[in-house]
Amino acid sequence: MEPPPPEISVIFASLGREAVVRDAVADLLRQEGVSPEVVVVLQRADTANLATAELRAWHRAGRIRLFEENFANAQRARNLGILAARAPIVLLLDDDVRVPPDLVACHLANYRKDPSLDGVAGQALEPGQAPTRDLPAQHAWPHLGWQFFPLNYAERAPAVNWPSTNSSVKRALAIRVGGFDTRFERTWLDDTDFSCRLRTAGARLVFDPTATVTHLKVRSGGRRLEGRPDLWMDAEGWATHFYFWRKNFGVFRARRAIAWNLRYLVFRKAVVLHPVRLARNLAHIARGWRLATAKLRAGPLLLDSKDAPP
Image (cartoon, rainbow, N blue to C red):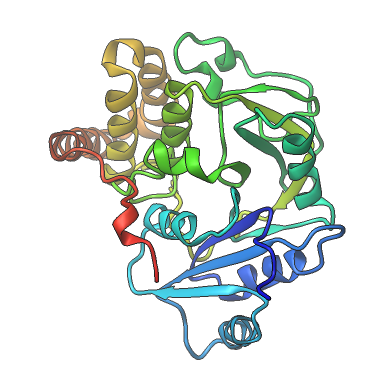
């Protein structure tokens, strides 16, 4: 007799952090009161890494399901994980989180209490960070202020933002809205874009601070945006932002966010007092606009059920 299908599948997409994701998976294998399916998608894995060998051993033992891919795109990896999942609810976690033993149970408690709920956004605390009850001023912006909802918020609340650091959603809905757009090549605004499509679909989401993780924000591996004082965002970073803003809101509705980013990332003392730095930043903005235009013309690359693994 085959075992019953899992109630929830936990998905990790990982690039260049085999040891880190191994630790997160170990946390998942010690969950209390529930046995989730654990799906790990390794991108361009270091085959000589001892952590990779341990993940493979867990896969052979049937404790996790491991997929090793040659591409380097977190959104494509998440889509593969969603398609591979066997449970009706999928929980996506960043690969560099530490997970308490009740995380999965806390997510599931929301769906058991309210079966009409579509998704749960969980809390994420950086090391040493305390929960807050304060909302930033940007949260009041029209149209897209919701994306500034702090992940360390301390109170339960209705949600729009669905952060892939620690959030769950009904698998059928994730597939229906197209999963993650692989035009987002950096891990930035990709889950916010997914949130926009959940919102358009009328999804009911809740933020639950009891479903919490520690987000280590490991600097190695992955493809997050990394700035420096003279060039906080390169052309690919600006392309990511312009693509997100123009695709979901249009320039007029996103004007406040665009102005804010220009003010604090470009038109600041460390840049404007150095003409060469300012010219370099403006050149990256112009190239980013062109890259975003090309992506918009090509259209989004969403989840395709034909790509489901066997």
